[in-house]
Image (cartoon, rainbow, N blue to C red; front, side, top):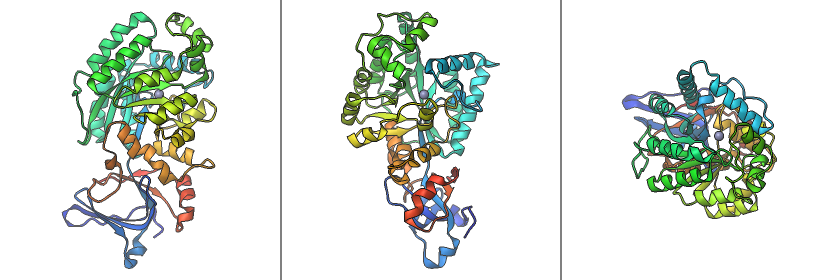
Length: 420
Ligand SMILES: [Zn+2]
């Protein structure tokens, strides 16, 4: 069968049969010529297609739905990333300008979040880690995830580098968590969980950071923080010099007493490790000390955003060293302010297309099972298997040979959501 479409045979009692050339599950060897029988939305049988059905096999690969652990949906209506990409502090100025130039603040944000969630859903994402900057953004997200039938974590972003912002931002954090249960176990579909996001070391006073971690520890909510993203950030922490000092001075926020000389990203990781789970977003400039620490604290997952990383022209990301050491590394898109789209699958293709990288199925946990677990969700929900809801994506895959499968998947067009 040369048709790229899956042939779906509707039967009685909502039975659907899909015959695919390949079934690709995270961390498992791909299976060829597979018949999946779905009854009332749940996978009832999964087996090799019998010989007399081989002519009905569609030239597609089926994979479980994806998790995008890190994005900022409010920028989703940007047609292209914001410029300039360097220096980073100038890019941040563009972000601030974009936010303040919106024609109608709240509507602007609502449209971005809705459009980004829609785009994510079409790109096969069923669970999203979103950085929310206002309570209005949180309620928009809540409504949108119910409509899109996906789940999410709303990490409320807190920003305040000067001491006089600490108490106001701690209050905002507390307000955000008011509706979050003290203990959450996540199994229900289409659920929004609340978390916190101290923005970054250059925008969050150390007391605010510590206060937020304390709140998160008491309420057992997840935390995401941008960390070790640029050389300038590391220089600011270590020496209190460099471009970030100029940037903070220009905003009248610089106080040389705020950061202790010799501070390393490790200090932030040590605090994050006190939590049940946390995301250290980017980690582009994690050194041996951070890698060693993360190898012993896999509940602090590193989020590598490959195309955003490339956009800013950073030195090679240490994700493979981190993984070899035993640390957990996930993939995220970041936002359309630094990335061309919100397809986490394209992030994986981008990484998989490099030399000396594991095949797609071994990288897949970074956008499925491991990613779900890092957000506190059940990783087994992100596997196509008997007993699970059929939440899956399909992509064109005309390939007879297992030895060529990886190259075919890397070159394949974007995915289509085929969940039932
Ligand atoms: Zn980000």
